[in-house]
Length: 248
Image 1 (cartoon, one colour):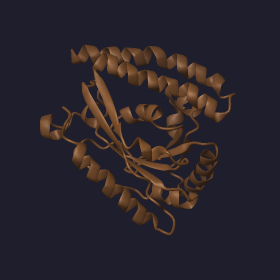
Image 2: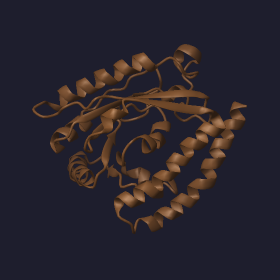
Image 3: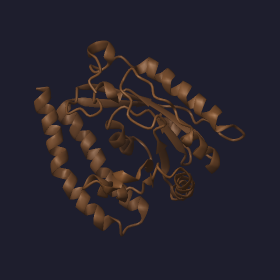
């Protein structure tokens, strides 16, 4: 049944993605926030479809910590689930991502419509300047900025190196950092066709002040909080190494 249910989920994605990708080309004529809200409806629909087809639900702790002006969010990255669900859970947001992703057929067209901060990591000096300029622009337009500090998806039970770029950006922009932990990789492993039923837990932490602090200090505090929460919420899903080995 898990193969059938997962197949139905992917079928829904394959059928709807081209339509939204074509829609994105017309939405580029709209201001950023209206086109974001229209395009984000696809992600919300796919999260609902995931619940219907695969029985994969989620719950969120700490929503009260989002009742502030737009800030920088440092989020654990285990799965594709959070890239969809954050659009349902969060206020309007943008991601910092690799420029190459915008060139992908269909998916890249939709991404472009969501006003991401796309950087070329091979040009570090230029990327840093672009991150700062576009970060200030996105905050001014009412968007939160989401950064995955480990840089890539990290399987359940493992821990990547937390880079300081997100904390440094928050310091430069004069906004706090909001840390986020979740265990999505235990139900939707990276690069996996299969989606397992259950309930993902996402935890949103209290804003971490940045004024008068170093990026290293802010980054360490965010990492300690995120990994502490991971210790608390991990180990419940079928794809955690303790249960069945790394399914990613």
